[in-house]
Length: 371
Length: 98
Image 1 (cartoon, helix red, strand yellow):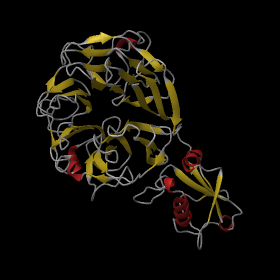
Image 2 (cartoon, one colour; image 1 turned 45 degrees about the vertical axis):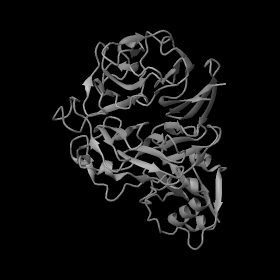
Image 3 (tube, chains in turn blue, green; image 1 turned 120 degrees about the horizontal axis):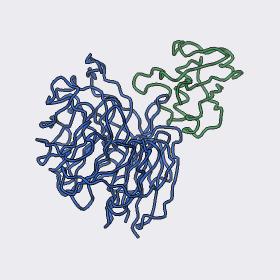
Image 4 (cartoon, chains in turn orange, cyan; image 1 turned 180 degrees about the vertical axis):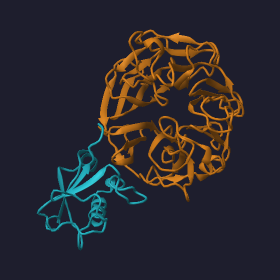
């Protein structure tokens, strides 16, 4: 029987939530790594029982944990993330040069075909790869060194590489997104990179349509249409129909186009979900109403989804890596909040119910659809 | 035999009780004690010191015999009472934040 496994990273540990295909009776397992920040947990598409978790602490640094049994047991693997060569400098918040310093792993992206190969997006922004199940990590230096690195600058959360999308039809093509630098694409498996930010407009940088410097919050792609990308930028929801070569705004009738999370329906490539957040100075939903917005037209026309979500006195945030979908026949949509709730919809957003209500602040949500 | 007391998060990570005893060849120093600790418990690598620079992490401190040894040189001898096992070498997570 089919089922789902929801992998939740929080400020104080990881949780594994499981249910059968009905997605009704949930089992909550955790906390794993209690007290540690778990920025991301993700499973291998090639071996769903192989999971990787990014475990970090301001005191004790970065660890990577690996599970071979779907999250029941874990073992620490390699945690040395050494930049290739002399790291150089990027821009600090005030525009002065600042040395590249490793802080943590924000996002782990296991290979579509090999459980031992994983990409890691880190702060300060760079891309690392392991090909031995996490024991050893090596930077893909072509990204940081392609030429614009000295102009990158941190967003409020740090200068993080937070999004990694591998084109399922061409594994040599990879998209990454960095706050605050923008989107970068490789077509040769990570050797060479170039910025793909044409069409983005950003306040807060001297040249609003500069090639780099944009605070991209999240990208999403439907695997059947890898040239179509959706973006939640700091402000603005954007879309590209040409693999990032150009971007167009699709914020349309959203109540606010600030936000973090964005995702695509598993079976409908034109159905997109965002969670509008009031502003960059008030990281909570407008009017205290937690609303997911869905577009069935690939953007511009959005409808609020509210059934089962708090519609008064709700002041949580939904962070960039905290939304995911399953691929069951009736697409499930999941998101976690900084208030510790993980909400699930089993009808593509029509109705929502919390799986759990009182976890630590949720940093990331991933979903595995199990055979 | 050197007695080392680790903070709670690292005891959990290393599957240890409150105190661990480790063997150090020669004069014990911060470096030799941590090297021996990491050799016995590889999961601790990088948690006390940056894995690349080997510098003490900013929020990690070393205490012994009621003194703060955090700013001693890594190769400075540890107090005799630590070397003989009479007193433990404390690894402390600095008290800051939650």
